Amino acid sequence: MSAHDFPETTATLLVSCDDCPGLVAALAQALFNQGANILHADQHTDTVAGKFFQRIQFDDPELAGANRVAAANRLEATVRTVGARYAMKWWLHFEKQPRRVAIFVSKTDHCLYDLLLRHRSGELRCQIPLIVSNHESLRPVAEQFGVPFRVFPVDAENKATVEKQEIALLQEEKIDLVVMARYMQILSEDFTRCFEERIINIHHSFLPAFAGGRPYHQAHERGVKLIGATAHYATSDLDEGPIIEQDVIHVSHRESVADLVRLGRDVERTVLSRAVRLHLESRILVHDNRTVVFAG
Image (cartoon, rainbow, N blue to C red; front, side, top):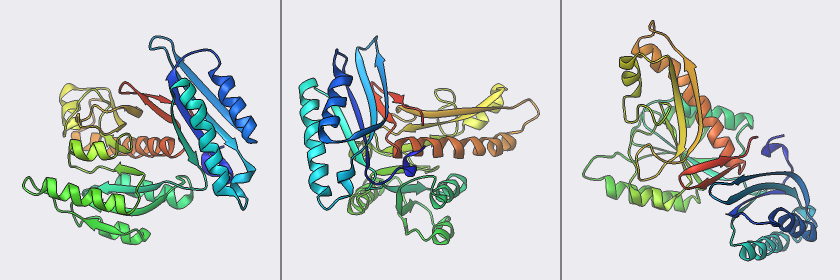
C-alpha cells in the first residue's frame, strides 16, 4: 500500500542518528506508550559511517478524534523526548496534512503534464496550489488543470529580485516542496537554503555523467548505449545534490539527437514522478550528500 491508501489517522516518522544499541526498541516503546499501532517499519545502518536510519509508519486513532490536536502534540513531545536522548534528527508527518507542492517550469511540458495527471488520478497525495514559470508558454496547461499560474520573467539583471519575490510567494502559499519540472534556471544559494532538501530537480542525464545543459548532445557525441535521467535535491552546487531516483533506457547508433531527446523524455517524467512520490510518502533521508531511500 502507498501512503495515500492509509486513513488520516496515520503518521510517518523518519529518524537518523549515530548508531547504538536500543534505538529500535526505544522508538517502538515510545509509540506503544502513545497508543499507536506500527503499520510498517524499515531501517538501515551505515556501518562505515556509524549511522542509523529508520522510517516508521503508524496509526493513532486519537488523531481523528475531537482531541486530535492534543494527540498530535503528545506524539511530537514523545518523539522529541526520545530524539533528545539519542541526539536524533527526526521528521514527523501526519497524513491528515497533505504537503503543498509548487511546480516550476519553463517551456517544456512533458514533466508538468505527467505530474498533474498523476495528481489528478490520486497517485500523488498532495496539494498543488501553484505553478511558477519564467515564460507564459505553459499557462494553458495550468488553466486546463485549474492551477494558478504565476510568471516571473528572469534575466541576469533582475534574477536576485525575482527570486526574493518567488520565495515570498512560496512562503505565503505555505509550500512544502518545490518541483523543478524542467525549469531551466539555476537557483541561487539563498533560494536553495530556504528550501533545503525540499527542492527536487529532474536532470536529463544519468548523473554524474553529462552534467550541464546539453546532455543528449554530449551522449550522442560519445556514442553511448544507455541514456537516462536523474532526480535529485537541488543545492547550490549545480547538478550535484543528493540523488533520489535514476533510470536508463538502451539506445543505439541509429538514434539521432532528436531521438535521444524524445526517448529521454519518457525516462525523465517517470524518474521525476517517482522521486516526488518518495518525498511525499516520507521515504527519503539525506546524509552527507547521499540519500537513504526506503522502498515503497
